[in-house]
Length: 61
Image 1 (cartoon, one colour):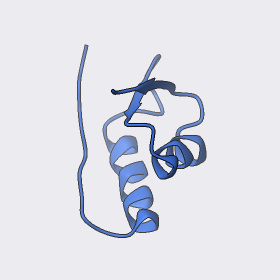
Image 2 (cartoon, helix red, strand yellow):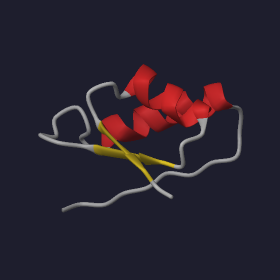
Image 3 (tube, rainbow, N blue to C red):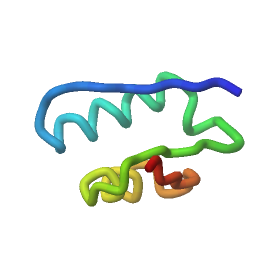
């Protein structure tokens, strides 16, 4: 299992675009299975659905 994270302080739109590009660099599009972990915030769910719709969503509580 390969765990990675990404963090930044910027607008949601800017973050989403850079996060997506970072995911591509890390092989997300070629991976067999990817988990997308978030805290349940609406903007994070929207980011997952917009950029990574085929990933497995996991709620981190």
